[in-house]
Amino acid sequence: MVCPKCQSEIYDNRSDKATGAKSTKWPDFKCKNKACDWAQWPEKPKASSVAAPPPIASQNAPQAQGNGSGRDAALVTLYWTCFDEIMAGLKSRALQGGFPGDQIASMTAALYIARSKIL
Image (cartoon, rainbow, N blue to C red; front, top):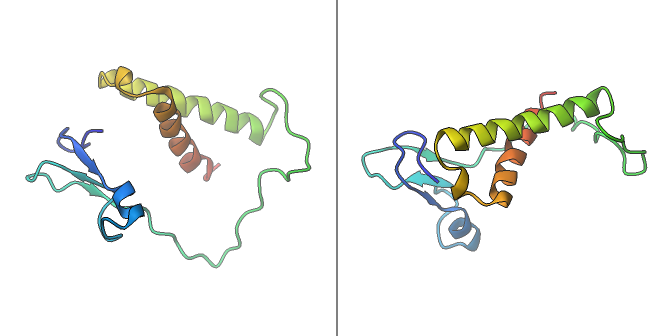
């Protein structure tokens, strides 16, 4: 991975934080370039007085087939839009060959999840 600010390599501290090798106060990602101050911490959970929204569909509810309609169709469209944006971003940075499919799927899923919360 590269720093979005200076394009240098970055440290991925997530596994060290999970094993206790590094404090949980460390950022998840930090630029290796000492002159750059970019770092990314995990998002803090937000306290809310509003109850959590109900699941999209109960486990016993019939699942939509194909693209469906309404919210299901919007979610399918959103997923593929996120995928296309991730692929375009990797291609524009000549990074497409540097990521295995499971990492591309993870990037797509992260973007999709964040965006689907506002649908």
